[in-house]
Length: 79
Image (cartoon, rainbow, N blue to C red; front, side, top):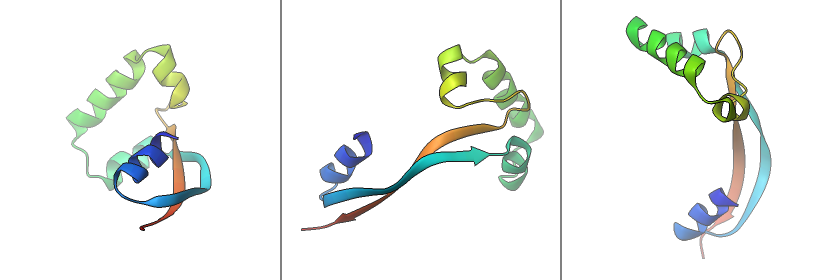
């Protein structure tokens, strides 16, 4: 609903969620692919380790720092 509100605010109409599900992120692969400096990789690990339980639960943070977020494919049309 939040995404559809943003889509409507951007002037689109008749938005439909085509797919919604978890997007799995392999932490090491992600940080290597993004060329994240080593100090920043460690900072992200520290932040993940110290994150509140609610955050760790929503993002399904694993012991190796892999995580998930909810992604969606939405089809919308302009009037």
